[in-house]
Image (cartoon, rainbow, N blue to C red):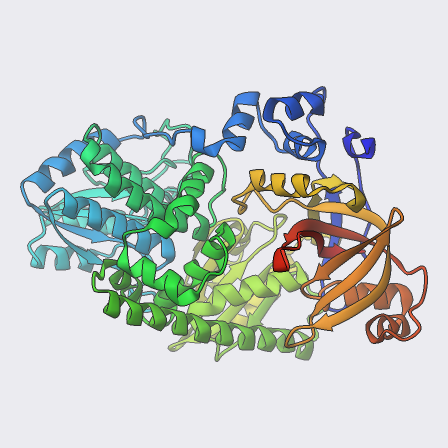
Length: 608
Ligand SMILES: [Mn+2]
């Protein structure tokens, strides 16, 4: 058993390249040196394996570990020290009390919709008359535009409040000020930089609430747009307990956006999401209830469901029709109307998924047809791909090949591109180096967007290849391994304790264990496409059940690579199963209580 408490494990095993997969290395995490796991076991009353895992999270002190283990005992910061938030709250509170007309300007993604919803509900509850604009992805593009200020003026608004955008809308904000309106910017994006690349350009609003401003001293900088919007409303109702219920309801919306905007699930964000998951089934929101209802969740809702089911349905509106379809759902009070709006979002998401699969296949075909297998940066031209899904498709290509990937599509008479990158390739900086071929570009290290003239496509491709300094080493994915731990040592208690690490998400990934030298016997292929492999594995003298939900991704190619096609056919055809076929697995344990028969199963994430 004490194999689990060795202080440091270094695993440096290269996984051989396979047809359908980029290279990867399993990389063990270090434990905090000089801390005995038994101290942690006693402190929280947990088993050794859980204590060892906690020691591998990068906590700076024991209080931070306490807050992680007990998120419901920690209090989300009120954000009193966020620049401008208190003054803006006083100003907006009195405007609401005077029944002023406020224009909320949001964004077309899940964070933009949820932050708009939070401000609309909050301001309305405090007495204001509220209208809103969510930009259209195709027609308006991202962020507040000067003509939106004109629209607000036309509608008789006294105040504009932005959310999840606005920090880079200096021109539009100036225009609104010239029209005589007050402007409050709430955002969580980096302010744009001046030509010296160090001075931040801050829009000339009355109040600018954005923790990424250099002048902001609030410690935690990672909230999403909806998190910032929630903090503003909290400041406005501070000290009045009659608004507690409203805040708890708005918090559920902010927690969904926090997962879907892929901000780190650390500190306040993790606490916020923990509360949201715990209370979502008690939501008062008719639209959210309808959306949950039409998705038919069997078990408790998890952060995975936020990120992969609820969020994508909200995003699908902004991609395929209008983000207003999602916001309207959350503003709808009639259950029947809400149910029909919700099923419309679910249907939109289904067509978005089908479009994505088709475009990802076209991307792979493009790479093969153009013999781009050896290119280290992938620039893929898919004229028929919808520009609203180009980013998702780039993400799929990046996942498959582990290379910086850009999808270029036709948009009117020009081209638009969207890219997703890997840690060793700063996409926004690399685009700056080829900007003579682009008409517009923006983004950050791991994602970017751009547009260009049709005749610049091939020159852009050549320039990207010529500038690329990525090495073979850079193109090997580092997969973090939390702990090398023997399958045979898991108890039901230890598996249940892993709930401590939830909710999982960005910067707080699913715990991954490793076991070397697992012996394979038979593999049953099941599921519609025969991609799920249920198998019996043997190690340390015991027999266990393991499941691989996508055998095509690793199990099949690795077994074929190591032992040949015949062995794979024998393992899956149950005829003369070859003895002694051994693999190393990356896995996590899970409880299967089918028919109240509690068993531990091991979910395989990767093999080598
Ligand atoms: Mn956002």
